[in-house]
Length: 325
Image (cartoon, rainbow, N blue to C red; front, side, top):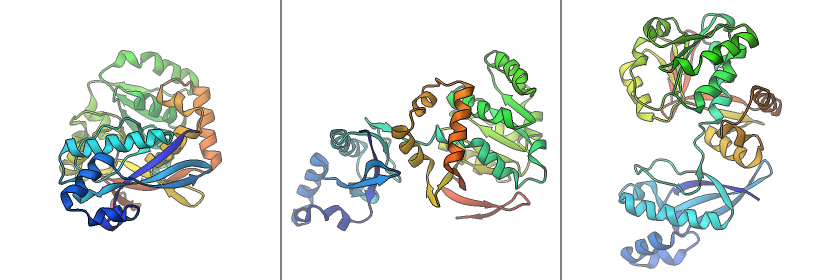
């Protein structure tokens, strides 16, 4: 059976020694040498939605880890991956808060495939904050030349009346735009040059790019900007240079009164949903996608709180940020 692992840094030094009390009696250099070479993990079995996995605590606090070199931290992670593989772990939610760039030899959940699946649900919630009905809201997708763009487009287009796609690869979407028109009668606007006018008129922008750009400069004041790319420095840049935009880069998910991160949800679906591999491999058709969305909604999953650079934001009906916490 495939298993998951949710990995975190120890909260305190006391937590590190809970299963290995003798470690605290060693001289610090011997203790650290042992931890680096053997990585004594604290592994707690977890059963969530009838899925088996582990909550894993690494043998350093995040403060301790951030004082170590990349090489040392990577060595600890490599050892942890060996241990988890031996316990049939196939996907992980990685630890957070460290400053190091770490490579994981087990598939890493980032939430990048779950977010597009909920993008229309998120748009519906955000549309309530705009002073116009959903059917009049203009949405613009910025092409990231990736799977996320295709997925967002396929999920959004059957549900809206005004949709633009900003792309440098018009030829990649000409046939798609014809298919969309034949399917639902929507005239998808493909934009490559007149970006300024398009973004100035957009109520909601969905940015799928992973690289830096400056398209956000053209967005209308107080418009909603949903960034679903992987470049968090891009989010920081937008927040610094356009303080008048409602920027969202993640959201929580609610299921049976419990709140989950998109990363955690993706981890669970990876080992439990037969169709999830079709999504991550871009091997789906519209019939399958409709079935997936129907299943998600029937199961009772819904969008919870919105996030901006790691913080929850509350947006009032005047389309201003009420709170950030």
